[in-house]
Image (tube, rainbow, N blue to C red; front, side, top):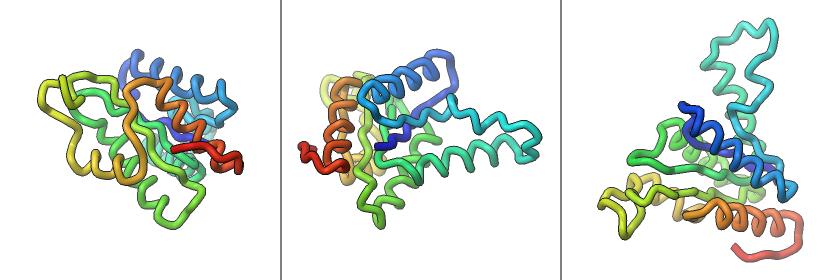
Length: 159
């Protein structure tokens, strides 16, 4: 089972949390791809622009993934994360090994209720609900992915 971990990576705290998500999956023998940990981003003599390297690297990982764990905290879903979700959704249409998207939403401001009234973007939320689920703890998100792993391995499991 391969899982692409999507989420913002702009602060040390965001990168640390994304690494923690990857580690939580690896503890269940799940191959977790966390973009900022990828050694492919620093290939000597690579003449591609940084943007091209990031896109090529991350797109390849998304195409190989069976699921996405997407951190959707904050008042707006990170634009890169939203793009990754859209790419994965499109790939799911023709690939039965792609199990779905687990959104990790721990920011109470965007939860219904108590929240502050601003939920997730309706289009993003529609995508998440069509092909996955929203969890409010890392433990529950990992449990969903472990269930999908069991399905892929033919061991059953609930979704």
